Each structure stands twice: as C-alpha cells, then as structure tokens.
Image 1 (spheres, rainbow, N blue to C red):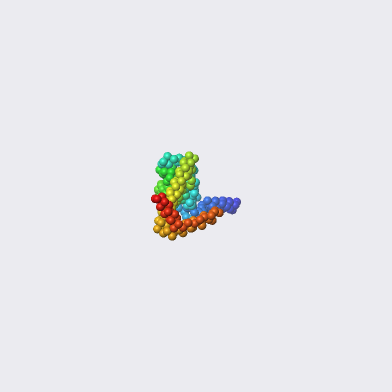
Image 2 (cartoon, helix red, strand yellow):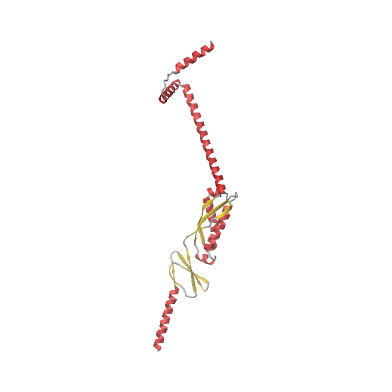
Length: 258
C-alpha cells in the first residue's frame, strides 16, 4: 500500500513538473523581442531563441520588430485654397524599443494609425492643391517627421514612411483643370508658331539681301523655279533671263517718259 502511494506521488509530481516545464518555455522568434514582467513589474527583455520564465510569477509579451504596412482610410480634406479633395495614404512603421511600445502606449498600432490620420488632415489642410499634386514627396517627408517626433521617443515606434497614394478631385475641379491645361497647350502652340514665323521672316530677309547683291544667284533661283513649274503642270514655259527682263522694263520706262 505504501509503495502504491509513493508511486502515485511520484507520478503526480512528474506530471506536474512536465506541465510546469511546458508553461515555462517561451520561444522568441528572430523578428521578435520578449518583454517579461514579474509580479507586474518590468523584469527583462528576452532575445530570440529558447527562453524560460517562472510560471505564475512571470508574464511575457512578445513584440514584433518587423515593418507594419497600413493603408489609411480615404479622408476628405479641405486644402489651403479651399478645394475639397479625397486623399488616401499608406503608412509604414516598426517598433524600435519594445519596452516603450508595451509600457507607454496600450495599442501602439492603433495609436499610430490615428496619429497618421490626424497628421494627414493637418498637413494637407496647410497645403495648396498645386503643392499637393506637384510636391507630394515634400509633403510625405513633412508628415513622417511630425509623426516621428510624437512616436519615436515616447512610444518607441518609428514611422519609416508615410506616402499619399491617390488624390481624388471633384468633377467640377477636374473639368476646370482640363480647360486650364488645354488653354496652356494652345498658348504654347501659338508662341511656337509665332517664333517660327519670326525666324522664317528673318531667314527670308537675309536671303533677299544675298540675292539682291548677287544677280547670278537670282538667275539660278529663277531657273530652279521654272524647273519646278514644268514638272508640276503640262504647260509651255518661255524662260526669260534677268537681262531681258531688265531691258523690257527699261524700254517700258522710256515709253512712259516720252
């Protein structure tokens, strides 16, 4: 009877030991850190690998150090020049201090998302529509700095990137911008056409001066024109040299004087 009691006690003790050992083992993954509390007080931070804690007395909270990607809900924002736009953004953040992320904020992921939404509305409300469309990179950097100032030191969370994904304009604003772009294109086309006319006029003026100073050049140009005319139409062309034209013009002048 005594032997049976001893065997039963040893069996119970063995099972209890196995259970205590099982609940004492904690495996921390490579991308995690384990924050251990003993009787509610911060005890230590455990590195990746095999770890042991004291059952009942210790409690371990695992914190992931990987970058978390969160897409923010589309927000309606009124820009500085009173244009209502709908903007959606994405924020990337990760924990750099697991102790602060556990102790100083209850839910750091939810907290940083709400902070990112508030910062998004605030920064875009201070920016004009043209800056939002053309200087988006500068706006992204400004928002990231604002978030880092409020999260990195007190919460142990760093915003590695916050980026505006898309800007949806009202239909009326899209039509206005389309008309503005079309007017700008027409303006550029007219300017380019006018510059071309100006350059062509200057070139013709130079050519006229050269031909006027060189009668032979005028004769060659005249013959070239005759060749082009003969190739286009089936007609008889009587070529006249410059000397003949001058003689006819001189005779006509004398008759008119007489």
